[in-house]
Length: 149
Image (cartoon, rainbow, N blue to C red):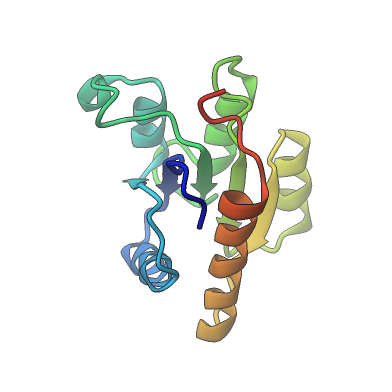
């Protein structure tokens, strides 16, 4: 991992099981990435726009990358993506959809709305670990993010 401070990762995921699996691989990876979690679309938008309980920037920093599930309670993932990518202050934040949906319509819609990457959650544990490691390696080691520019 780089020696510079790493940007925060915002995970928007309602499934505790999926989040815990991701967190487990994040920890095994030896990551020092600050992680924040929202469990639904409304909470994610409040976090991103610093509303309600997220008014303090220390508790709701601008993420360097957003990991977004599509199937969320309340405001769904596609709507969260649409709002992020239409906002001049947020549209440069990379959004990675990490979902169980392999529906070609969902994939096309997300790319039309500006998603940076679309990953289908593998059901196999070893493939999930490989996906998480690849995601972290790409976004936090290889790619230059518009964080603190």
